Each structure stands twice: as C-alpha cells, then as structure tokens.
Length: 323
Image 1: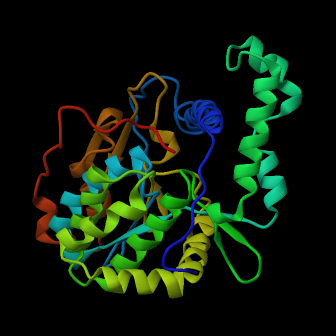
Image 2: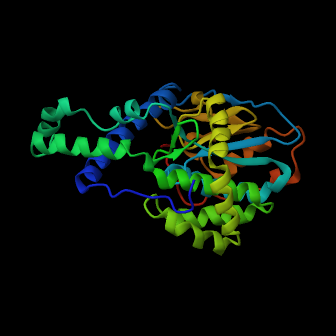
C-alpha cells in the first residue's frame, strides 16, 4: 500500500457505458429492494401494525451499514446524527461499511463489463450508434475493470472494491480509521458531514484531507492507519456484512434485528410499524425520532433522553431506497 495510489484514465466511451450499466444496475437494485421489502410486506396498509421487537439490553447496539458515497447512505447519516448527539454513549451507535471481496478478477469483470454478443440489442435500444462502437466500449470497460490499480489488494491476491469505485473504497477506510481514532464521535460526524457535502467518489482522494482538518482530525494518523491497516479493516467489515446478510446501503440493525423489518412496508406506502407504544407510518420510518424510538425501545431501562422528541430534518423523510 503506497501513500499515493495510482489511477487510470478511463476512456470517455467507457465512462458513458459504465454510466449506462450503473443506471440499469440501479434500476434492478431498486426493483430487488421493492420486491424484498415493499412487496414482501403487505400490498396495502394493514390495520394491525407489526411490532418491532429487538432484544432489550442495557446498552443497545445500533449498526448502520453504508458506503461513503451512496446517496441514500449519506441521507441516513444525516438522519442518524441528531440521534447520536442525543443519546451519546448511552447506546453503541456504530457505522459499518460495505465492500466486495473479489477472488477471481476475470470472472468479476466479465459479469460487469457488458456482453459483446448483445451489441445488436444495445444498438437497437439506442445505447450505441453501431455495433463496432459497442464492442470497442465494452472492451475498454473490461480492460479498465481488469486493471488491478482500481482495487485495494491483499498479500494473498484478493481484491477489494466498493460499489462506486476505488476512491469510495479508499474513503470507506479513512472513515473507519477516523472512527477508531476519535473518542469524541461528534468530530467523526463533522468529518463525514463535510465529506458528504464537499467531496465525491471522483475527487475524494484529493478532497478528504481538508474536510478532516476542518473537523479537527489528524490526517497523518488517518493516512498511517490506511497504509498499515486497510486490508484488516476491510476484512473486519466483511465479517459483519456477511454474518448479517447485508446487501445494500443503508441497512440499519438494532440489537441484531433489521429496522424497519420487511413486514412493515406496504406497496401502497401505507405500511405501519409499532415501536414501543407508538405506531409509526411508513412515510416516517427514516426520520430521526423514529430511529431514536427504535433504539429506545431496545433499552432495558430507557434513559431520560428517550423522552426527547427529535424533529424531522425536512418536510419529507429520505427516500426509501438504497445502493
């Protein structure tokens, strides 16, 4: 691991094709999400709301699984921030990051770079003007994917990736390092908030340091952590994502139970969930007060902070989607 990772220049056509693939992938990801969340719940709102019932503990665990540049993950971080500020160390509120581990890069890239045998269909659909253009773009995309500089590598030959590219994978690790180094978690929240507002998955490697310094973090310590611990940190995150079958950002888990549960969603948007003594409408599942209630309902003895009502960040809650 070097201090200045090298990057490749992706051909313009490859960028266009990657964008098309991402659009299609996002569509099917959304369809998958609604199939497994919305439709698995009731088709219409039910008069009897399911009950959220995580095990009660003295100090509840609230894990939120994200990717550093997933827009839905960034939205949920904004929602969680006031909950974390309110409860402080009375609950364990912990970020987790989603990575892919790749053992066979050729197979991985072949499945993600497009199928040249389908170029006639791609042209007919309007994605390309000619089959020759399609074939050239797919090959460029495959060549880029096979470039191992696009990945974080381990000594055993494994590759690690994040959905939105190498710079997102790098930023995931930097945010983990910052979390582990910071006792005052409000500093970490400031850092992540700064990055969410000012950086992207295209410029994070040159943008993050200013955001960390503005939050009061030591960038040298974060860089040292990245260089020495990146693979170990990724493997640690993989143990959590795999053991909890996490597939998308954001995923929220309270004391081992997904929040909200699938059964709470209705296709017509009128699903409900009973949390503690309160019945919450589907439109309010992703609000600060609802997330606070999910944690507070999981205390053996809820602290006085649980009596505080947190206001929504805007007139509408973040969209119920994911990366």
